[in-house]
Length: 96
Image (cartoon, rainbow, N blue to C red; front, side, top):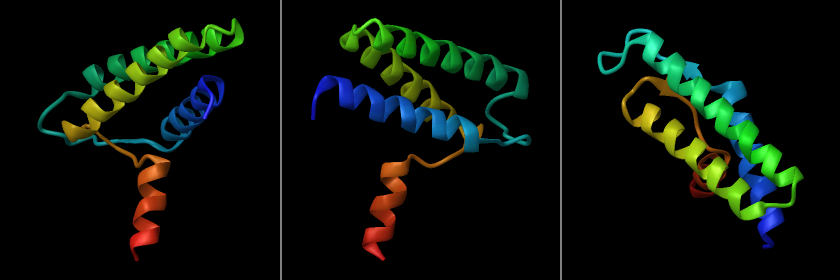
């Protein structure tokens, strides 16, 4: 898979998660305001990823979107948000 296609895949996956993600209001690990701040960083890095993709700087774009995914995974591990990556969802369907 080309770097350009990989960037497109990651950006699409991250956009999907942001559309469908739920905040866990009663999370004991993180307050809602902190979650909101981190999600704003996620959105900013996603915009950076799109900007660099459009400039054909795919390495920088990939780094930006990978950082988004890391922040989202950290929020999920803390129990502050609920979401599922599309690849994991497909994998679970195959296992059934």
